[in-house]
Length: 463
Image (cartoon, helix red, strand yellow):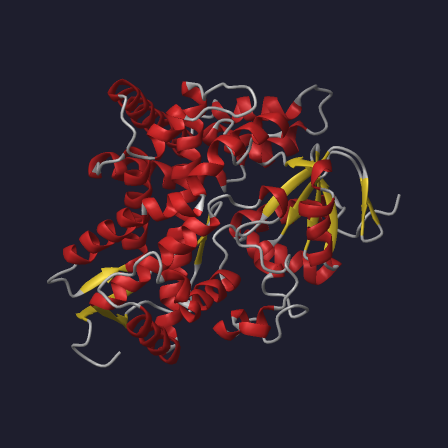
């Protein structure tokens, strides 16, 4: 069997476990540097193939998508999101995709655009009189507020803050390596269902972060389930959740159960706030670090947007601003990897990949690959303008790719452009964060020290 190169010895695998805990992105970079753009190794009963090749990633996500399911790593993620759209498979996924697709159609995004505008205007109003803020915290608050109001139809600050803190605790815990160490220890034992056993052992561990993780799940479940009951009893139709309750599958005329509603709401809360907030935070850092880019964005907003907030019709004309957002997501993708597992053995770029291998597409490294991005580490929004946009479509995948690409990508882009415009129409920002940024890595990628800035009313001094 012609498997890709990769670490094989026990000491190498042990070192890799420690390296993953310390900095998984650096581990990925080191593996690709040492073994090439396709690497393979086995850890316990897990097999892994790591991809930093756009053609190989396209094969997994697009051309052979039917041969790949969500990877083993998503088994832990299911503890949070249940069987929602992010992790469901086959018939369940197809049905949920049909039921949810209406929510992210352009006409429905337009219908709730006023929520994006109103909530952001409320945010900048609360900045009045402040001299310093952390834009990372503010972006987390505003994106969660927007998705909460879009889902539930009303502002619930206390519940939103509890959900935000709980989601942070859950996502942080999922980056821990306890399950891998348990797998490593169970590997030589003659046991069946080692993966399921590893999850059960992990759940029973008496560690503080483990208890905090499961308590966070309880908090989110309590709030979301109470809201579902409330909206069902009111029989109204004013928001995403109401429409999800009423939505009927066109093929079998069924509706979502309460459990399905809970799972999809939690999916939307995670995908609809954490990723967009991180994308915005990195974009602010890049713009503030590049005054010429900041000035050009501000000029475009002044030219395109007539009022103090963009209309839905004006958003597509913020072409350069969108390019700045995309270039930031290229360098700092909110989701920094995608993983799948193959049903049947396959061949990728001449290498044999056994059935049941966890195949990891490294978004962070492929989007920084010199093969596709000359001067890859340099911030150049022009890469996403005009003819320069002619890159390999699987070398830029911040929203994933293939049939399972993010259903809410347009929502996220329009939300980000709306937030950026209203903030910059009202305020100018002065750099007060340190460089270089240190990562905080969970399922998403965010700067550990946030994005601290000085605040002054727009136009009060030169930007």
